Length: 137
Length: 137
Length: 137
Image 1 (tube, rainbow over the protein chains, first blue to last red):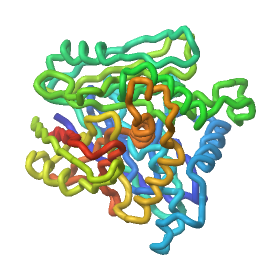
Image 2 (image 1 turned 90 degrees about the vertical axis):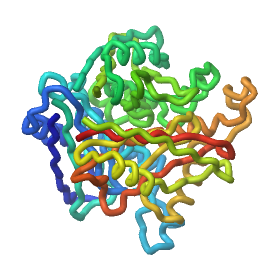
Image 3 (image 1 turned 45 degrees about the vertical axis):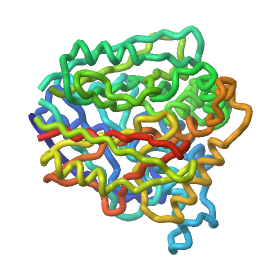
Image 4 (image 1 turned 135 degrees about the vertical axis):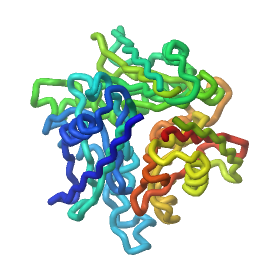
């Protein structure tokens, strides 16, 4: 059984950004030598997420607007009594979910034709990590 | 270590449908010969999802209405500037999430008494795929 | 290859509760002897969820209020024609998602500094189960 673990670090320029990371996940799968198995792609923070969808800038704009509607910035979150101001970032993270598990077949990510992996940053402008853990044979 | 991979194809009659696929997942687990492990059930499209919940027609109706409230059809999604009209299908897919990982114990899906696996189609009426990847011993 | 399976049981005092279960997951990983791999943490019910976020009481309060806004209790869910009254619990479960997969590196849960695992109960006051399945080497 083979395992391969990598950590990606992102430091976004804007508070919210959506970063296409399929190439990094593909590279980790290639390095692992795993032919059959899975790769776990997981944000290591509670104000970020990982998701699979389209790499189309209009849709990414729609996703960002939609997340702001469903989990809006507000001053009065109870969480802010700790001195934080990022309550909405936590809720956006929960909505998107913080990890995905992707199949590997024949040594490659076994995704559909339009499926792309994204790191979703909801409280950026500082170094934050994503773990890639490949597991299989 | 054992692996077993299958692809299911669905071509729904309606744009949105919720298809009970526990029997297909159980059959894949049985074919795999895996006694201990996991099965990844993942939509291969960005306008579909996979989830676990009740196989009760009233609830499925509620889920569909609720998804339309939270991620409604709208004409003015930015994504539609590409010529598409399915922006809401992408957002519904993100809400439901596109994959689940299910435990296998003693050669069987180790689900609770009411847990059933569903394929959620949000932009159907064409052939779309789901991957089942069983992994274990 | 090593596998270790445990079942946790919760019987909450309130209908909705958020229970911090990182210690139980860490204990299962330690017992398994797995140094490299993954652990699946999955609710075995369709009115509960498992998520990763902050162990901060204000945020947990915010999460609860937010879930009630997005998936509110209502009398008129179609599901209630079966005699049930917990339609909202099913929708909250879908929003939170019922399972997470967590990485194990060097014999330990490989989480970020603030990531904690929670069992989210949306229809409690009766015994309900969570499965922990550790898998690796």
